[in-house]
Length: 424
Image (cartoon, rainbow, N blue to C red; front, top):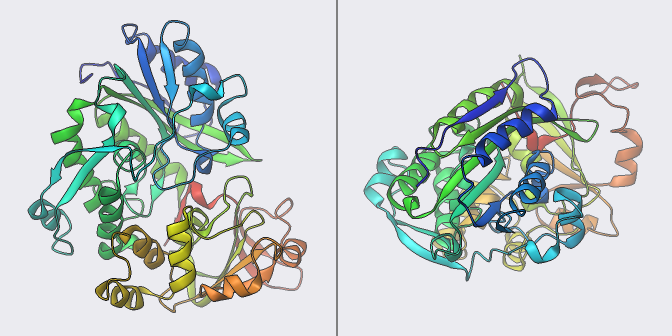
């Protein structure tokens, strides 16, 4: 559906777009769907707080609700439901709580079809071979809505290569098997071969699912490319349409703004996780995924995580992480063979992604009253008291990138790890 929708964009390879440019693209898209009377907006959750998608979603709600019934269903995937405080902070206090709908990936989905094992084997170059069910939230296909507008950010991603587009629907509003198996396909193929690439095995299986099954969904996209400065999103591009072309254009711009190439590996990376955005290693380990390629052998990644309160975003994931820890791919594969991750391959994949395979060490600096030294060491990481870490590495004053401490320690600072990829 909506394949004849005209595509609009505004982008800059040099600077930041103004509100007039950003919302001008939004207005051009909305002007084409005046027939829509029941609209579902699908933004990310608070873990994408620098995506610009919250402000754009609020804008769309205000404009569309003048003439249509509008609901907001964040693309949670397996993440926890947003709190009312997070809804207000991310999307706007004037958006009523009654407008929100919650996606439950365990119970709210219907099966649309299956990506065959032969195709998965082909696109994964023989590393995976399994049938993958395509499930999405039932309200996308039961005629509850005559327009589904997916709003999100294109940025390097550890599972799919470049985030968003159909992933927002197939995983963000998807079911257990697609979430499980797509993550495992990516983990087995190796995240370092995937991050920052467009046509990865997981993206290609999403493309298959979209081509064969998402034609049942009246779906259009608003895609941003952003960076962060002084804890504010800086929008460099916005792309609107219903085909793959806006996504492809966004990917090219994101490669410019969100991928940093270093001439050599560094001995120590210090990454910071915003407390409002990152409360678990399930999400916070983007600091691991996105920086792992620049840490030298025997080096250290120090993650300052003042908001950390748990490991998994669900009780199931938290329990499995606490039980088995981040202890490398061979260990996880053995556990899988023993059936320890039955119907929970997404957790196994996350543990594989979050392990260094012994190449360097990971230290998490937490508030010990929220997550103790014993808990952090119990999952296979080193621990540092956040107060001690913050006193030494003051993120209010340290610059992004290379920095030499007064005592001569050489570090590389990453203040917003979820917004990029650092590579060689």
